[in-house]
Length: 127
Ligand code: SF4
Ligand code: SF4
Image 1: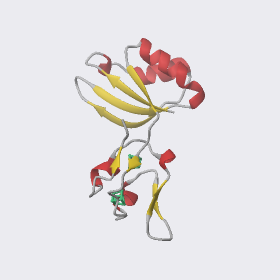
Image 2: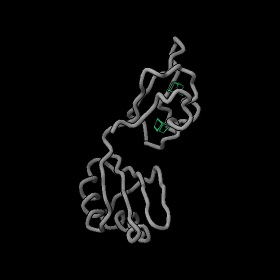
Image 3: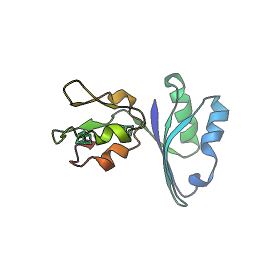
Image 4: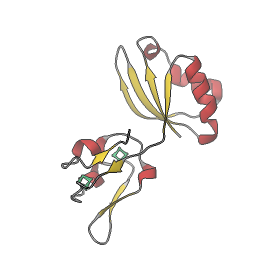
């Protein structure tokens, strides 16, 4: 399961992810981190069966936790240029036999790289 963690000016200075990993005995995989001196947003991957326990500990340590349930989406603007294929680290996109770009959205780790390069603004994260 993917979790979006939001840290404030206090929690961003604590080693909260490693403490949570040790306390719960759960491997926590950091997929994306945007961390500054006063705030931070980190996307982590945790095993589905441990997610509730991990969430509970994080909330106890005053981290805002949001489960990521919606993955990358595409609108009709796509012109199948293929730029997203080369940038995606998890091979969400592939070219099919008709030169159309197909998506396997379950592989998306929410890095946002494809959204930045798409020339037609076809890719987005649903709200
Ligand atoms: S980069 Fe955008 S326009 Fe190009 S194939 Fe990907 S989604 Fe379509
Ligand atoms: S957000 Fe990142 S992982 Fe998800 S499809 Fe785009 S490039 Fe791939």
